[in-house]
Image (cartoon, rainbow, N blue to C red):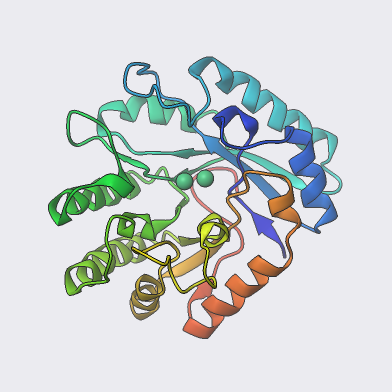
Length: 266
Ligand SMILES: [Zn+2]
Ligand SMILES: [Zn+2]
């Protein structure tokens, strides 16, 4: 069964193609389930001037468009409407409000707002900041609102070497996800961005997916779901990368999850 729950739309300003083109690509590629999970809006305009997400007033149109496509193609493909969201404790009520309107959420914690100023996870300055970031992720997972954690190894971006500290931080996140029965996402956007052979990490610094992280995930008995993280319809047409990802997880002995489940409609 071919599924993908991580798909963006042009609304996030860094993806392209019409919503219908993603659906068409998924049908051609033989998917059974296509879940859209565009970057959710947040109501605080002052903080998020970086245009990497839909505007607040685009949310109803997004949901409407995905629902209409689902209805139109229901005999060929299950189309789900989700969102990729951060967890910001101060906006929990907004998060719950969004949850009630969609099929599922994936936790994509790109920013840490435990400080006054938002910081991109890849720019966090030291281990202490990254630890706080991971605490935020674990707290987010424990709300029970998220069906999986997207690119769980993205917190490794600021570092050059996989140290014992980073190993224990990886273990902390893996254990938390495992204990809550939440799958980790093996993110193929990360692979597509890598310039060397996939799975070997970035030439400088640690990229995602990070092999050292995934070895720990295997030791901790985590489950995993493969996420295309499509920012173009063509990303869904690539048959090779999901296959490589599946072989990679199988070789590590990590159980693959193909369908997301949660207290929603999946
Ligand atoms: Zn993401
Ligand atoms: Zn994404």
